[in-house]
Length: 335
View 1 (cartoon, rainbow, N blue to C red):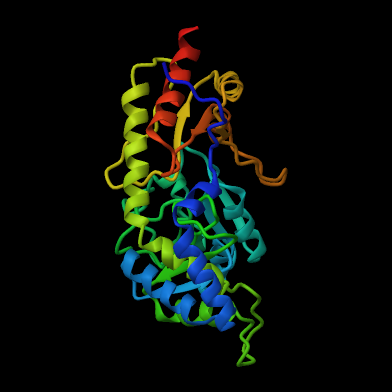
View 2 (view 1 turned 135 degrees about the horizontal axis):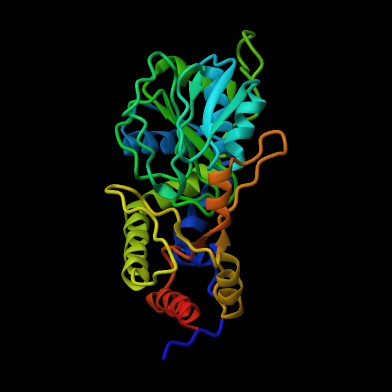
């Protein structure tokens, strides 16, 4: 009989830190002892690592994935309307608004790509949205890949935006993000805009820099990224195997090449399941991304989010813990 006395956390940053503590502490003190705090060699090394991993010519380290989207719109000179899905975190929509553009939001059953100034496909939970089947003509494409590191290789879009928020597949110890691109003009613009266009007077940028300390920590974790991805897939496979026969739930889409930032199940009993798992020491997350009243969630996306739940899938979760989560979900639906 499986027994878990302590809460199985949805995400526990201490576990990963403890596992790689020696290496992380070493680079932490190295950066501090060198005094290399802003835009130093660790950021440059991280940018090289990221560009090589994604398969692009360039990468720019930034302060967040949100800033990556915002600066991409500015770099591409996008004005007017920008198409994006209703099913996304509010940061996607917020970046469009803050860049002075108008969001044109589409629901799960409809794609808008005509008559807009740019298009932002969003790869939620590591599932890649296939935008290549549409003819967008000259419209710039900015991929919100903040939840999809490892799923996109050798991209053809104008810019790809990444987040290294601590809970992501590759997580910093605070906020961090980046863009990758094959466009030199976009690269040069964002590289200077992140630091106020400090050395010239052509424009006003902002403080969108990646901390050198965060870059140093990410460089350590980059070595283990293949393991992180493989372990998440292993846990995802366990969920598929253990939960596939429960008629009351819908499993996430299995897509060749996707990564598992999250494993999301769908059920009309979402709230009851959430509470039941919490009572049984399993922490999950409701899969809801509210927008503002001016740009409300569209019906199908709102319904989907209200019926979906994210399960623990951190690489440091023990097999026993994942087995326990599966057992408790089965118990709930067998009541």
